[in-house]
Length: 99
Image (cartoon, rainbow, N blue to C red):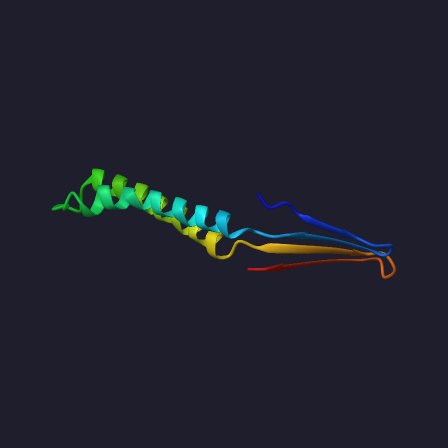
């Protein structure tokens, strides 16, 4: 597990918090699991009648599963490594991030 890196000097405090590649791969792997719901509920059954209340219920569940997968894939790709800098002489705080 990667912990934040703390660099301290007389006039500056820098906190660097990276997102390791293992955590990104974990999120990407988790993103695949919710995609089983649309496959099992929409693609596999071969729906014949789309004006069915059960179909609309299944569609809502599938859209939610796709949204969760998209969120997990986004977390895997854009997991942000952040850096915070507290600068005493200028009395400023800077925050930056890298994807």
